[in-house]
Image (tube, rainbow, N blue to C red):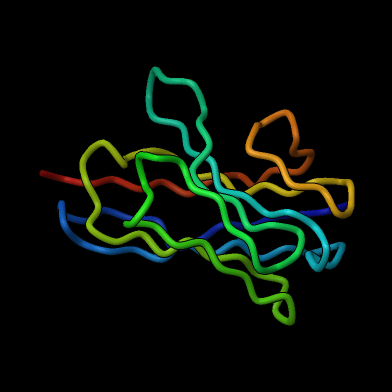
Length: 125
């Protein structure tokens, strides 16, 4: 069974940075897409960023492009989300996700089979 554990959330001020981490266990992340989604109170869960199964390609939501960076360390079975210039609208629970299928990328929730428990990010103005 794949388990994903996020960490690194917290309370920051607008303009600050945070780095989220997601450690996977039960299976390697090599050759699997990894993604971050977020859900703010009263809103649908939305795509934030994804790291291609190739380990090289990345995808971003328009709202975070240029501010957030997703990266991965396959040796550590870990994916990261570096968030810079945070805004109050970025406040949400951030979830890490991965797929059960090899060699496939996806930007939608339905494409992901395993989810972490989430980590809260709060941004004060």
